[in-house]
Amino acid sequence: MRVIGLAGWSGAGKTTLISRLIPELSRRGFSVSTIKHAHHRFDVDHPGKDSYVHRISGAREVLVASGERFALMHELRGAPEPDLKHLLGLLSPVDFVLVEGYKPEPLVKIEVHRAENGKAFIYPDDPTIIGVATDIPSDVAGLPTYNLADAAKIADCVEKHAMPIQGLLLSLSNER
Image (cartoon, rainbow, N blue to C red; front, side, top):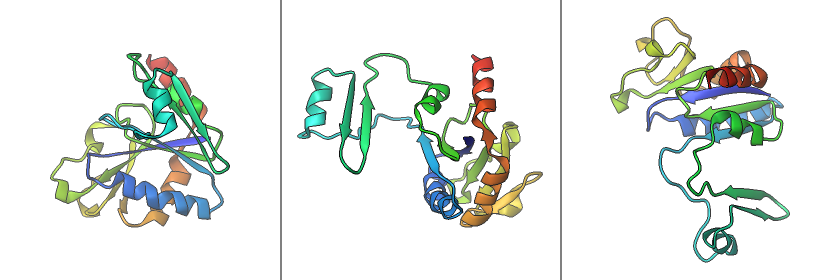
C-alpha cells in the first residue's frame, strides 16, 4: 500500500479532486481507498434506522451488512480521536490510500489551492508538500504544479510520489 495526502483549506476542492482521482487511478488498474478527516461532528446513521437505535442505546460498535456493502460505526464515547496510524490499520490492503486532511501528519502531500478562497499557500511552511494542484499555477514557486482540473497529471504525481505505508507508519511511530 502507498499513501499520499491532499491538504488545503476548506473550499479549495480537495473532495472534488479526490472524486476525479479515484476513477482515474481505477482506470489505470489500481485499487484506491480514502481517509477523510472531519473537523466537525458527522453522522452516517439516521434516526428511525435499526442501527441508529443500537448505537444510541449504547453499543460501542454497530456493524451493518448487506449483500452490497458493510459499514462499521465505532462510537468513541469520550475516548480520544483515533490517530492516522490507527485508521490506516483498519483499511484492507489497496494500491493507494488518498488521505484528505491530516495536514500536520508527516505524509507526503499534494496541496490543493483555489485562488478565490483568498487563503495563503500552505507549501512554503510544509516540507511534506511535493506538488500543488491549483487554478493559478503561475503563483507557485519551486514545486511541480498541476491544473486543479487535470486529474490525469495529478494521478501521475500520485503514482510517482505516494509513500509506502511502512515508511509512513514508522514516521508516525517515531513522532509519538
